[in-house]
Length: 531
View 1 (cartoon, rainbow, N blue to C red):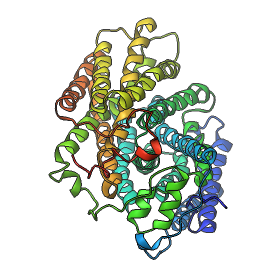
View 2: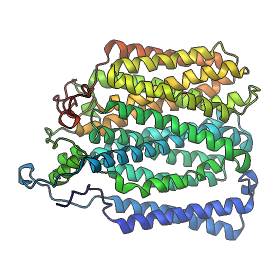
View 3: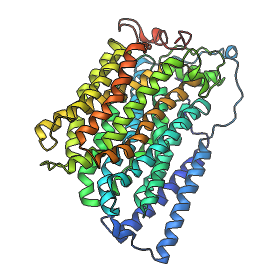
View 4: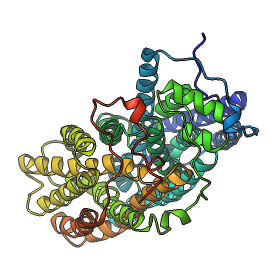
């Protein structure tokens, strides 16, 4: 008997791939123009354009925009007739355990890659700031407009994509974000600082949108495999930072800071090419009345057949209903304070370290510090699944605060002291991002899970909106240690609040129990979505 195929085709593939090709062509033309004029990609490349190059530039812009529109239309789901849950009587063919294991492994690998590409976008900002500041002659406060613009985009994107995930589907929203990743690599060709800020805002929207959707998909396709969710979230966060810092260490001295944007184009294209390995969530399919597809997907991944949930309105309002108000408030406060640390304080570390007179470059220091923080992320996965979700959140929040306080007493010019302090800080912050997404996803039911994850992600980026201009201004009048002490206060307070009033989310039972039979036993849906 033929084994079932996972539902996951692009609705209009010719439109979609034509659009991707047009956008890629437009970006390639920008790269050619930039490096034909100045191989270093620096300021000299923007001293003027001939009439011919201006025409080519506008044609390239038109190709990118038209490509995004066409590909976006290609992703719009076709109108389907809803099926009755009781009308689907034919059981799908059984699936071999080996194929099921392969599908799960593929899923984790592809979604981990998506998260890494997503994390590279904002992480790259930290490594372009020194070059952009030198090229345009800006102060620390002025150059902070780049990360500020990007983070404004991520806040909007987190909310928009969170809602899209609940309306058009998790898979379509992931591919839409990847499509805009392709288009926004043109950031590296913007001739003016103002143009760079505008492009950073646009780039930030899909970067903010990808994260909450991936966490939602991981929960709904690998439910209650909490260790795998946390490990994927944490390692990809570190991986994105490693990739960004590694590329900066290798290519910025040779090709300039603008090259960091163009180097991400093949990664975004590869993510689109892997789209067949990204299925739709069976919970979402069942909620949309697509019961046959839901049953096939559930069978392929060894999940219980999805049970339709009671009709629940989507959007932001249910997140602050009586059942979820306290939990949503705690998540938002914790996410906001972490964003102040990661997207605010950490953004300026390469700049500060480059001025500290260390024997190695700032990207190299942060690369090795992030690499050495990986064991701490693995520990977070184990603790989250085996110990306590709330206490693991508390532990890594406290470690982040402790890492900041350590920097108040460590001289940055001493590598032997500065690197351990940075390892502690990166371990704490990567641990927080590893557990915050899975914790949020396990809090809400299917109908507004995407929106809940989107709100949490928007709060982390909102901390970053406040952070860059605030910290840039503070660094101009006080040393890094004092700034670190001030930033440690909100993360410490929100961590204490989670410790006191946060609740445990679903954790899978001991491994001796058959996971296929018990995977939904502790999810919000199975528990009646009790707070």
